[in-house]
Length: 327
Image (cartoon, rainbow, N blue to C red; front, side):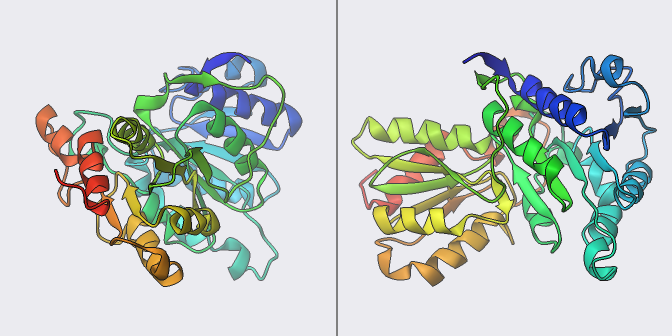
């Protein structure tokens, strides 16, 4: 099996689906002439031409609206946002049109569209370019929300998202586009709504997604040195969320720590904590713990960025808390 970068995995998913279905097209800022802000669409203009790889103005609300209209008229747009921070400008189209079209039309109009791009902090980018939005979009009925952590999952889930009949929000990370991993050359799809157990364990369950999986897996490696075997679950899909995998893991380990990059109030971890206490309370040997981004706007200074985000060290400490171990 060959090893490829995250951006190449996304590119292959787009290319394969565009070759398979002429209704699929890509649009967004700099996706064509510049080969993509993160080079995900490199070479695609040459292959598919300007009618299917379309550069847009710097106007997220405008081109998101065009894409939603196209999706309502028997095409399958993939919209690339340079960052989900900029997509806040397009939220009206995603929330009030893409997500509501099917139900408001009584099933007469669907909206098979994918909105994708990097999400969360990417270093010293300041408060307006460092936000994570999974919980925002997961609060919207009618949307599916995917947040991937590695090239293999990214390719398989993007292909599934493009084929899905519903609008899909697909979240990546600027700091992962160069990550490499094994990806099959043959075609494969990963089902939307199915989490993946990245590491088996018996002592505690750690749940995470997107680039925070690096923190979760790093913490698990450190804990293993002290004889603590953590089971690490990558959610992959935020809505619909794979409750069965989480609950069954908690029933086995009796402890849960959640790691996410979002603000704490009304977050993905909040919902998971509620559901676990509702459906697996009798299996818990300790309160559910979570580690999130700091409840504040992101600063620019590097030391403050590091302090605001989850870390391996803080995750290890939380696991030891639920294990009732002395520091």
